[in-house]
Length: 211
Image 1 (spheres, rainbow, N blue to C red):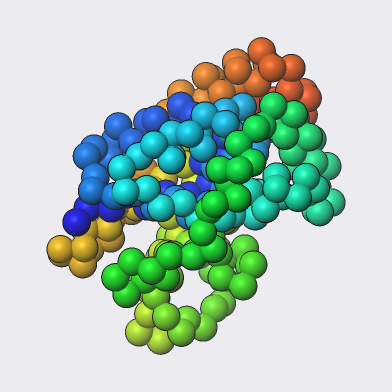
Image 2 (cartoon, rainbow, N blue to C red):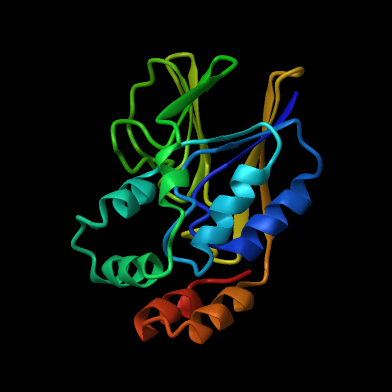
């Protein structure tokens, strides 16, 4: 079985569509959460994820924030994104159905472990195999005989903003591939301008490093 595993689309429909095209046909799809917020297509990204065959979608912290209607963080930029994207969001019933976690083969798929931001240099003692997202960085950590894969981010790569990352899990070969693909970030920026996003939100995407 060939499984596309992806995370942190964050309302970026062009990046999501690029990943699906780049990955090619898959037997099933696992989203690790955070389809919503930041980008201007939160509704459309929820719809597309739910339309995929054999699609499993997990709850991320941004879905939790949308459901509660409250962002608890102190970052003013994220607060501005949250207010803007929540204005036109109406897929609340759909995101309430997202799962907390999902087991595939010997891996536990979950948005993150213990609500941590986990990076390549994070010191973490593994007690099982994980596939996670959340920190928007793609990497593999190995210790205690276990693996932790981070799928990275489809829609908001924190290193290079116009590169989307995802995993392909071939269960027949028991092999996980880490993949990258480029998309047109100007489509996102132009749509944000059309929707009158706050200037600091637009500048975030404009000023990030690009490939």
